[in-house]
Image (cartoon, rainbow, N blue to C red):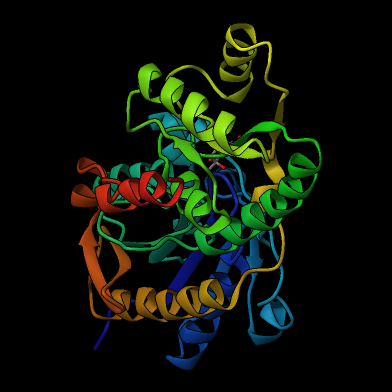
Amino acid sequence: MSRINKICVLTSGGDSPGMNAAVRAVVRTAIYHKLEIVGSMQGYQGLINNEFMKMNSSTVSGIIHLGGTILKSARSPQFRTPEGRKLAHDNLVKNKVDAMVVIGGDGTFTGARIFGQEFNMPIVGIPGTIDNDLFGTDYTIGYDTASNTVIEAVDKIRDTATAHSRLFFIEVMGRDAGFLALRSAIASGAEAVMVPEVKTDHQKLEVFLKNGFKKKKTSSIVIVSEGEDVGGAINIAKKVADEHPEYDVRVSILGHLQRGGSPSAFDRVLASRLGVAAVEALIDDQKSIMVGVVNREVVHVPFNQALKNKKKLNPALLNLIEILSA
Ligand code: F6P
């Protein structure tokens, strides 16, 4: 018999498409198992402000297809302080909450790990970020939708790039990780990709510009991750335009549109599976873990492991770009 009676769910950090589907799954699973459930507004900040939303089956109807998050999201500086976390805990006790499900990325899980230890609070994390940069899960919620959004935009830019025989540097999100850049580059047929994990090889870029772009002279697309070491698409494009005045160079920064929109079928199903798994893990007396998916099976990964290790880009995928742009 589980010791859990009332769960609090929250979304924190950068929002990602599919967070609502995950909230819905958490709420409905709690109801299914006859547990009480509330939502904290604006992530951890809602715990500090005592801003809870009573959740029931109808509060999560009609949200599976919505981007953003009905619980709002935030990065709470106050929750990083012991005083802020004490306030948060006092409010959870006042509201009789005895377990939590947090949906977000590494910042969210770092907060959860500390809070869980300090107050012996059972917490399970669901990975929600378009960056897909969490170790221990093949996919994070929102990554698939964001990849589709990027390729739709790149396809459109390709039309105009080809019409003018231009070289485009397109910047995508990913402060510290190139998963979104790499996947979208393959799927959009980009000629090159620049990611934070690989130091930019200027010689390689030169060879690509001379052999690839000059030879084809139709259009070229280079996908640049915002965290790339030269400092983003604007800097790279400037460098290339200075060195090659003969090329017609343009830049496009896709920005926050990558975080919005209706989640893909893949993200909705992933969010639904992980929402169910998170609540069932709490019922099973588990704590300080992230639920993820590896080889299509749900897995439980300790926060320590998910946070300590760095997920690596697949070198075979990096190689694909080079082969396919020949
Ligand atoms: O972590 C998700 C993410 O979208 C990153 O890819 C990006 O660097 C960052 O959030 C942007 O954050 P903000 O919305 O605070 O500008």
